[in-house]
Image (cartoon, rainbow, N blue to C red; front, side, top):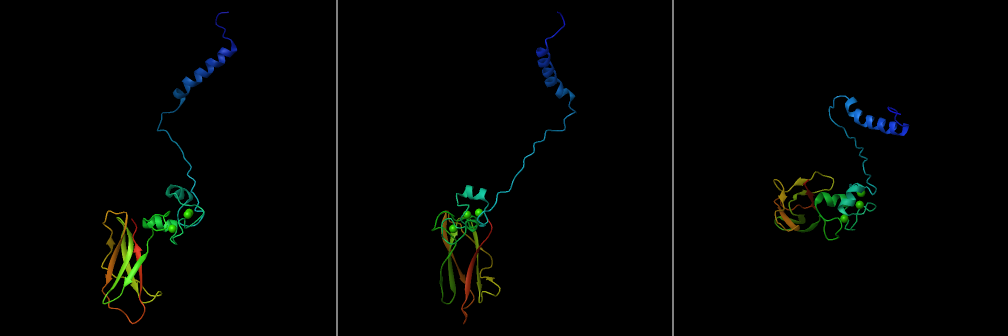
Length: 166
Ligand SMILES: [Ca+2]
Ligand SMILES: [Ca+2]
Ligand SMILES: [Ca+2]
């Protein structure tokens, strides 16, 4: 019969109509939106690196000090040292006493450091330099030193090194 479309064919036609009509029926577009849910990665071992960051740095998300050098993974990443290498870390190498104490420490290329002094661990720490020292050598890791211009004290004196944010 002319003009009669079998029901199966009609459904296909309907779908076809919907597909073609929907864009026409939609309101004028102000843009297309895409929503993404970001779930924060936990820091399982509490070393300052999330489990996701630990994967990036190839450190152990269940061990705060992957290479067992007594500097935790998060601090190593901050300092630029290798968190998976026992011999790579920020540390004081030695202090030569004399007219002026000379403090020597490990460095990473491009990082800046401030050496501090105090006559007591409970007192204020004072930078022994007017500013900071930046490691300019191209070698990935090296060492720097700074002389403390303050004469030696009759009491024990303490030194510490602070690495500045990159
Ligand atoms: Ca962690
Ligand atoms: Ca870790
Ligand atoms: Ca470590």
